[in-house]
Image (cartoon, rainbow, N blue to C red; front, top):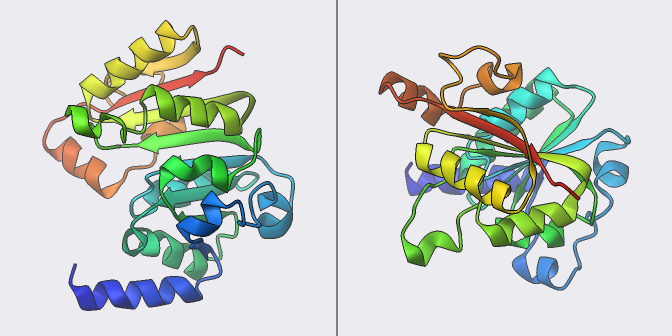
Length: 225
């Protein structure tokens, strides 16, 4: 994407009513007024909140919002030029139960209050296994602890990925922590029983992975306490 297009998207994001771009300083200093108040101030209802981490172009957040109109969806990504597409589609199609936040996911506890989120989706995260980047992987133990803090009791986490390594890594991690695996599938398009929300929505990169013949895995789990 050219720099001119990026600048255009950045400018439009500033005008979109469904895009929030808090500064890191505001988040770290807890000056983000929406924390703990997403339903009251943004969605104007008490519906469950579902968060997609690393939402990319926003395809999954938008797709889920269409599928579940009685839930509120929030896509988070640090790259605003990417989720511009999802924000634009949502506004054009009057999809009012989805918004987007430009922020670093490591600050998720500064974005949401304790027990404010009902469910988390992680779709096709970077499976990088190099040591220096392990701390940034969205399914490492530090991030899992952060997710637990913002999720309600029995809140669920979904991982959809083309990385067999990442799928297996998370299974080992949650079993080691004695959490409950609700559903696990190593090839959701060639085995029956996958939840419809896992198979009926595809991201741009997912469609490329499928064309390459890669299997898509899906895992859903919840915390034991």
